[in-house]
Image (cartoon, rainbow over all chains, first blue to last red; front, side, top):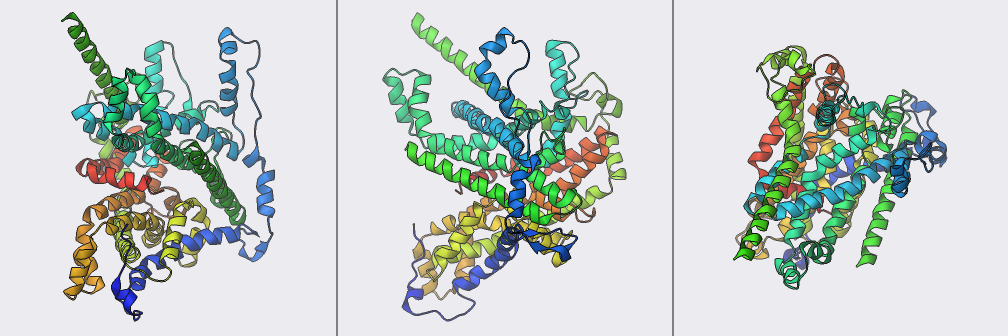
Length: 337
Length: 286
């Protein structure tokens, strides 16, 4: 890397003029420190105070009380525990028991933290696997690859707000596409209320999110696939490996950095999820889709008391958790190598 | 001979499966938008019939005329989104590339520290600053102003822009700068005459990334600019209209949804490569 090695600056100490690196940095630093660094640090500071925005005169230092409140707040830390199927089991339920219990657990609402984790567990694995599958196909599509890349990229440029509104209609119980297709395929009068059923709302939103990010993640995989020399897979094929074996033994291992990138981006994004729930369900039904960011937003701006101190603590607790998860992810990926 | 033809048949079969699968995936990606566009031209009864139609039986513009009559705020939302997004792009690219120039081409005290500060905040979720930001903007009367939102978007897009542009500028050959220096160019002049033209495609990629971030941003816009129609951007406005209209008239809603995604999609189709480069660069930042 050619980081600036300037003879002029080495020769003599530069005078302070407008034609200097400091002057070039100044506008960016000014905006950045005022409108990014300061608000972030201010939130940290506020998280140690009892502070309601509309009653600034009552503001006072409370130390870690806000953080202790988070731990005691059922709407944040509530967790249903492991959920087992009820009543007499059918044959299918017995056969699928090892999968059924985790799924029922993940699909049972709890506090905002658990709901965020629920969304993450539904969204991240699918977002790692499905775009990879799509990318492997597009990679083999030859000249049509560009077309498929473009078509699948369309949702990526559209905002969460607009996408959520479109999908509210797709999930509409009466006029929605999903129920219409189900009625067409299975007959009957399927009237699933996707977004107002506590067992369906979170998976429905997660499915939409996977759809929304497919194009970008696929593109990232395609970039990663292009870095793999074709000779390697060809050599494996010549040695008698089937396509599937070549994929598992050569392509996937070499693609690991990209898989890690896609997974990490999905993970961070999932832990911060907000807009979809705010628009589609407002956290409901009940609190089943209440996520961390949605809850902190509500605490700060919707529940009437404008509890900026507590909301700041929620924000920083979430940030610390995201930081921790990122760190662990990096550590794990280093160990694998 | 027979073996060869079996092999060929299998290969054709494989590629048929491949293309059919790919077509199916693409249809799922595109169909929702297509459906909204078509539905926005359907008359009221057709939208609310149990018999779902894909192509409208009757085309009508009534949804659009109704929308412009009843959704007075929509024009504001549009204007605001355009002003804020382009304002953010210009401000971010200008301040960010100047800073990237300083960080990539000069050696001075604190350079590494400053770069690390920028880089470090990429890791911090912007939502953490939400409450501090609200307080700050409120203290300076910048809530519900386009200036406030633009400044806040600029701040949160700077780190990424600097990171991208620093790499772009680092690739510009040092000889060019030296030559310009010999010819008597100031650093400021060589920034405009060498770095900007040489980094044009990088600037375009970063610009589309910042544009999309600003155009699609939701939580800050919702928090800072949700008091009056005059200040709302499209994402917040459309969400508000959705809440007001979903029980009344889907057709009107569709026409507004369609108008809010159409420009970005058209822009993307025109500048595909730049968009894709910008978004991958934005993702690979880490």
